[in-house]
Image (cartoon, rainbow over all chains, first blue to last red; front, side):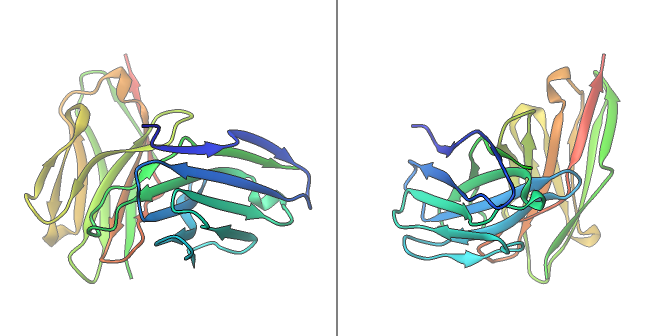
Length: 114
Length: 112
């Protein structure tokens, strides 16, 4: 039982390049989330999904797209990377049985945009 | 709207001393409240959560937090700090939505 995994762990991009971050969970959770973590700003929600085939915008969605084609996977895409997207990205998942359900986090992807 | 404020971005204590990390929340409905811990170069893991049962919540590694509605607070405490407690701690609130709102975090340093 791996929990939540993220690929890749670290990536360097040049401005304007594109990339996709992959999140996978094996807990059969309905809900999945993408956050970015920046110093002094805590975690901010980028996009989230409440089930296969659904996505919704979070607090900071601009410059990112997501897809949830399979229940266990949640992809985060950067179409044209900018230095402002240098950050640590975390994926999380949870069960929707109640709003107090715990979110389980992946280990993070560290992205540097030059 | 819901929000979380963590007072103090950095807290330093000596090993064996009391740990107190402060969290105040804003919510228009009874909230669910969480404390997560992040060790260096790792993801977040749940320390404890309040879901409207007992107001004093015990978590892992000897931490506990008390929900005080009158003060809109959910402060995290541990009677005796250990070197292994050095990490970043995040308070979060969920007010009957699909989303968690996180505070900006408090970095705890423990000195020998």
